[in-house]
Length: 107
Length: 123
Image 1 (cartoon, rainbow over the protein chains, first blue to last red):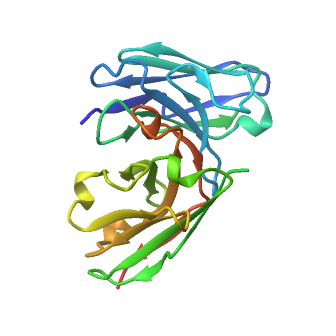
Image 2 (image 1 turned 30 degrees about the horizontal axis):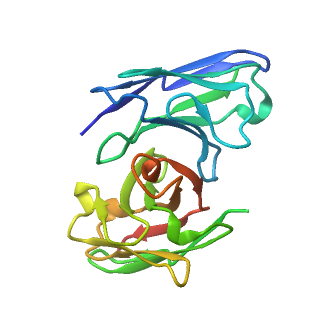
C-alpha cells in the first residue's frame, strides 16, 4: 500500500497569511494526487486533482504542486472560510489512500 | 447541479447487516465510476470501495473484502453498499463520492461527495 504522510498535522495562522501544507508518498505516484478540504460536520470538498489542477469553481488562491513523491498545497491570503482540515489522496493504485490531514486553525 | 444523497445508516449490532444507498442526480450517473469513503468519529478519511461505470469491475480495501459488496443500478441512478458481518471498527460516516470520469485515472479522482450517513456498530 502507498502511505501518504502530511505535515504538519496542524498549524495556526492568521487571516491574510499564506499557508503551505506538504504531502509525501511512500513511493512514486506521478501526479495522481488530489487535495480536499473538510469543515467540521461537513463532507469533504474537492480542491485539486492531478497535483496542480483546480476543480471547477475552486478559487485560484488554492494551488498545488509536485510530482513523484513530494507535493504541496498552498493557500494564499487565508480567509475565515479557509480554516478547515485538508487531506491529500493518491489515486495511482489500490487501495486509494489519504494522508492523515492537516488542521488549519486560527492563531 | 450534482447531488449525492446517502441513506440507510443507523445503529446495528456486531455481526449485523446494513445496506447503504446513494441516490445521484444532476449528471449522467451511468457514465461515471463511484466510490464509498468512510470516516470514523474524529479520524481521517478511508477509501472503502469503487465500482466502474457499468458495475462490472469493483475493488475493495482489505479490511472489508468478503464482508462488503458495492453495486449500482444505473436505471435508478443509485449506488449501494451492502455491509455484512459488521464490526465495531466499521463505525463511521459513510460518504459516496463521484469519480470525475469512467476510466483510470479519472475514475479514482473524486469531484463530488454526498453529505454522508452514519453507521454505528454497537451492542
